[in-house]
Length: 356
Ligand code: SF4
Ligand code: SF4
Image (cartoon, rainbow, N blue to C red; front, side, top):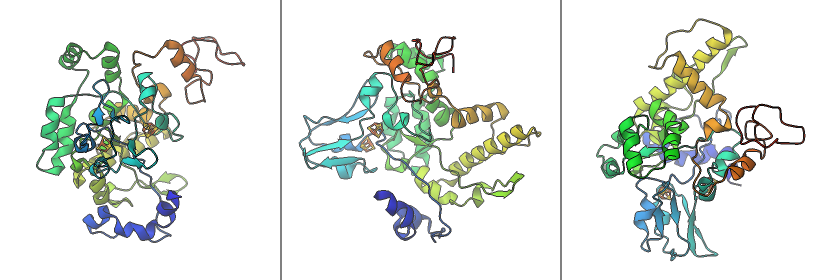
């Protein structure tokens, strides 16, 4: 399967990786020295989707209501221009139906206020889904930014702060429902992307203004001995800063350093806090309160904190309640209760929340 190639043959195929070639740097490729990092990729539901622009049939469109990019299977004529047009290689041609297909951001679930199935079932609980309000009028200028290293900053400018009363008012005037504005204010992705700026867009230099963002991976932190953990400088980590910069910041290493230093601060702070030690100076601008908030969202967030998805018009309380009781991914195995303990036979019939 594909993972065999990634995991065990990577030492050979990595030499052809354009991201490595660009930095002209030798990194550990010998079998004994390598470690695995995975980068799950799905369609980015871009604000400037190249696939939409490339389709001669007009079969690909970005939905007004939630920004999901879809391919109409009725309108697609199998031209396949979208396949090479997407720089993320996220469109696949179905040779049985002769239509193009891609991630649909699980829109039927989305319409019912439910997280995407890849997010819901992720055993690492590493996906976060939420609403972002943005200024569509600025997108063309962002995509046309001359210096690729400025695209990330410009993308942040496109994203609007829903806590700003003027933004909330304008959103309401433009017909965005109250529950969407509320969800935007509580959005976990807004915190990761804009407030704390620790999530970055993948290959922003492709200029499609992607809307799936990534917290860059930390290299393995090695234990010096049983009593202490050695936190390396960002610069000394096994994944070179220059390499991460090729992937997440169009080569701007300062952005990667800032994010890694924040994540290091977070770990250092939590180690000191857990041991009851006095906290030391932090490298980054965030204080104890923010670092603890980051820890809660990144480390121990509950289901309702990772996903803030406003229900669409079709969702009923019953559908939401039924979903929250399924599969053990919600906070309570029985879907939550309103204060009294759930019975051994299952949910006692509340709408979720409260008791865990
Ligand atoms: S990632 Fe590719 S397929 Fe998805 S919206 Fe962007 S350009 Fe289109
Ligand atoms: S599970 Fe849904 S959101 Fe996730 S990649 Fe598949 S279609 Fe896209």
